View (cartoon, rainbow, N blue to C red):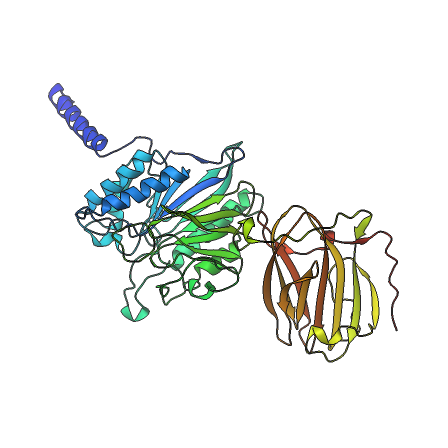
Length: 499
C-alpha cells in the first residue's frame, strides 16, 4: 500500500469511527455481565408497548414514565417486549429510545412486536442499529431459525462465573401469511426446537438440574385465555386475549423442560394479570407508552429472581406506586398483610408417621363416612392407598402433624379420583370433594413456623383410585407432601387393626 492509499484508508476508517461514536456505539456492547450480587435478587424491569412516535409530543411523557421507573427500581436489566418504535422515522425513534436506555447505564435487551417492522426498518435492520448502542446486550440470534431476536441471556452466580439463571428472549413475529389462521403469528416449531436444545444443554451442564429461567416475547400464547379468574390469578383483564389461533406448543415445551418459571408478554394493553398454568406463571407486562391505546396508568412490570431458588417476586410499578405484588411459585400475593397467619404448635418428641382410618361403603362425599366405624386403623410412613382391602367403594382419613419450616405463605393441592378434602389446623384448605374422575384443586394458607394439624379425607366411588397431595411456598417449587414432612407423637400407641 502506497502512502496515498494509506492516508485515504486512514481517513475512511476515522470517518467510520466518528459515525459509530456519534450514534452511541460502544466497543463493549454485548459484553455486559449479568450477575447476581451477594444476598440480593436480580431485578428486571419490563417495558412493553411503548409505541414511540418521534413526531408526537407525548413521547416526552413516555420518557418520563420510563425514567421514573428506572429511578425508583434501579434494576439490573431492562427488557423491552415489543411494539417499541411503531412510527416513522424509525431510526430516529430507536435512537431516542436508545438514548434513554444508555443514559441509565443499565444493560438492556429487546424482543420485537408485530408493529416494530412496519415503520421503515426490517427486524434485522433494527438489530443492526441496536447493536451499535451503548448497553444493548440483545442479539439477532441464529440465522437458521425463524425470526430475529432469539437469544439467551445468562445470569452468573454471585460467587463465581457459573451460570445461575437464564432469560430466554424469543421473536413471536407479526402476522400469519394465511389470513384464515387468525390475526397474529406464533413462535415457530424450529424456534421451539432451538429452545428445547438449549434448555437441555444448560440442564446437562448443571448436573441434570434445570436452571431457573424466565422467557420474554411480545404476543401472548393461547394459554393466557385459560388462566384469568383462577385462584392463582392477580391483576386485571379488560380486553380479550389477542393470541394466535394456532398453538405451536411453546408453553407445553417450557413445562416439559422444567426450567422456565414464567413468561412475560405485552400486546394487549388493557391486560396486566399474572396466573399459574400447570405451575408455569403466565404474565403480562404493564403498558408503558402514553401514545398507546388503553386506560391503564403507564408503567412497567418488575421481576426479582432469587439466586439459588426456583422463585421470583413481581409487581407493577407506576407513578402511583407499586401494585399487584405476586410470588412464584406460591401463586398469589406475597403481601403478608393480606393474610391471617395460623398459629403453630411447638411440639417435641415427634416421630415420622401418619395415622389412618379405613372405611368401606358406596360414598358420594367425604361427609358420608364421618363418624362411621372404620374397617381398620394403622400407621403408615407415606400418604398411600395401599392399606385398602377393596378395589372400589372405600375411603380413608389420614391424620398427622405437618412441620412448617418457616413462617410464610403456602399453596396446597390435591389430585384425586374420586373426592378429597384437605384440612390444615382444622381449616379447610382444599375442597376437591364429590364423585369425579382425576382432577386437581388448590388452596392457599398462611402458616406460622412449627407443627400444624394435617387431616386428609379421601374416598373412591368406582374405578380410577388416585390420591396425591402437594405443597409449594414462597421460595420452593411445588412438590408432593412426603412422609418426612408428617409426624405423630413418639408415645402414640401403635394403632390396631379393626375387624
